Length: 360
Image (tube, rainbow, N blue to C red; front, side, top):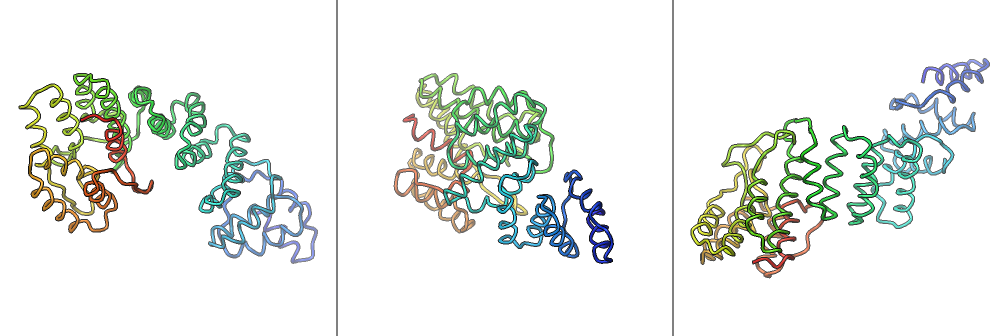
């Protein structure tokens, strides 16, 4: 940055600036993020004075920082595949990520991410972005092909380990995800429950597999394990009253029902309808998808009117909750309804898997 400014000042003073400009262009671009308005003149000038890609790249970053997205896209596109610098392609992919509904933009974005990875195989952020892009498009096998080799060579990167576990779950490799999660050490931070949610999903999906095989005792083992809070996953166990295990209790109910344990089935149904969803200081103690479990439990207890009173109150309490809207629509139509991927969570996925399993 200093060399560019020196070159620009020398240009303004009608002095020789070529040596300084060349040094600026040849300097490593790592950790250079222009953001000052006064830098516009410098990089616009340097872009015209040189056929190097670097000043155009810096100008594009500056335009993006100033929210001049269209101009930034034009500059990044004008550089085509000239730069041999991985972050350039990662930055361009990020710049166009909101436009991937267009087939051509999607293809170029994927190509940019792959280019970034090829230039720097330790560039975990590009691998993470590409994996998440594949997963968001339900191309789970491609997501697994992308993240798996990297993580196996970088097992200390718990962020990629979590993504690997999530992608394994998407590919229905539940046991493998479970084994992986046992080896991760997630650094805890406030509100960090992602590791536990992956753990819970892996355990309950395995429970459903066992239930399909009519191995209800093994299923109950997975369900009870899902209620645990392993320390290595970066989240401490909340108070019992703040843990929503209605889905776990419903799965246990189904197991006990098939084992003809009437006392236990009654206990499980009672535990489901006893749970009270609350929100304190914007923090909810519930998974909204479990509201469907509550309605099923009320029906199993022959208390449908009570269930309808309860769900109407939940709708009043949380009128904008998309998952509760999904719950009501699914219950009324007696079939699970579509829901946008942005609202779907582990509980919704597990309920979908249970519904498709045919276990009753």
